[in-house]
Length: 523
Image (tube, rainbow, N blue to C red; front, side):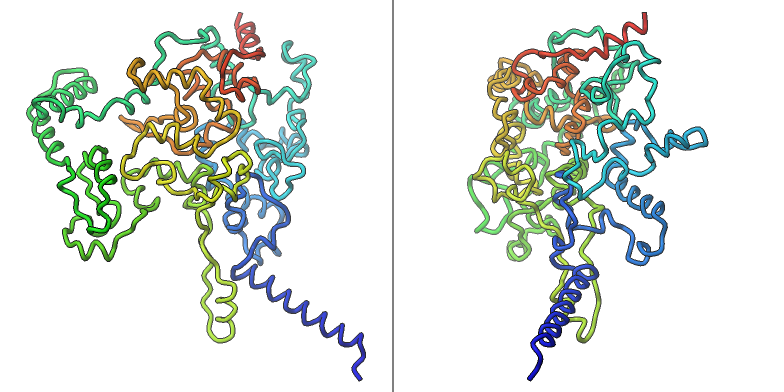
């Protein structure tokens, strides 16, 4: 009779081998990687925590043979694939060159700032603070031990005040550096006749549609083009080419009668909405989005065979490249960032092919709202909605910016800041603009603050990275707040948590003294 202990040992060995095979398969092939997580990632990275190679770019051999410094450098480089452009735009106030050289040896011993993970360690949620900082809050003291002696205004200040709104950020101080504070320190709280320049342009009726309402559309459009060229060149220009251009632009305009689509997809409401959209105005028929590889064909059978009912981000990006690129940098679309690790591919024959099939790796799919870290701040009835697609926020045929600017946001977000928007002065101004009592660009939408217009050459585009100006929130000051407010008011408002929660319904209840100190030093 087999000894019971022997049976248990055999069972334990079999189960251990099976466990090792599963872990090995997950590590080297694919499968349920969440089993390998040693701790949750930060809220920002939660969507991509299963695309491990996006951050962990070194392989098993490197991990076993390379020095900790080289591994840390590789990890920092991986961080840069998504964040380096942002740091460069902010003119990083603590670049690594500040910590090089013999004079900085003592500083490096206290704060090894060569590597991102020194301050931003992942998988340690119990010690991670806002901005994904995992170091204690006194990290500034490592270098700035004598700041109280060097500046009278800083004498006696606690280290907890360093990163207060309106004072300092580690990387981005584009609206907080001393020269900027001095230059704009005397600004008014509310600027007279405040208008957001680019928002005003984007919300002005499309010139083609406006021209079509005139008795002579060609002349109306030609006049607009001449005026635009004159403003650019600051001199008179020839009108012959612009008249030809006006004719060509108007010839592109499509109407409901021009629709080319399989009969089962010809929804009358969709056609009516499309007819008045910029897409129809630019000559884009249905297949341009629904069957882009066959957009020039009139063969309905071919279109039906290749029809995509809900085109994805890749189709929109063909025309809206800047918008699509910035979209993948924010939380809504970060799973589609080009640097996110692609599924692992393993070629195998024989028995190994079975393992590859069992542990098959799959690409990240769009995240549902219920899977995000902010689900508790969202409306319960949208938890099943997927984010990561343009159609989530934009009505696909209308492309109505009024809907995308407010309704798209408030239909999901349910936090106090969002709901209080409807009680704010910002909303009042938006309602006045919609009614025609306010000029274009005088209203303030959700998108105006969180997705502002960015200059690009002679034009501009709307940044679709809705997180770009949230962390740190002082990033809003220059591109957003100062369109309508003075610098001091903007700093004080962002530093007041209750005012932020009320969606700026009132005046700041606290005052940040950084401008006062900067002006005093200039006296």
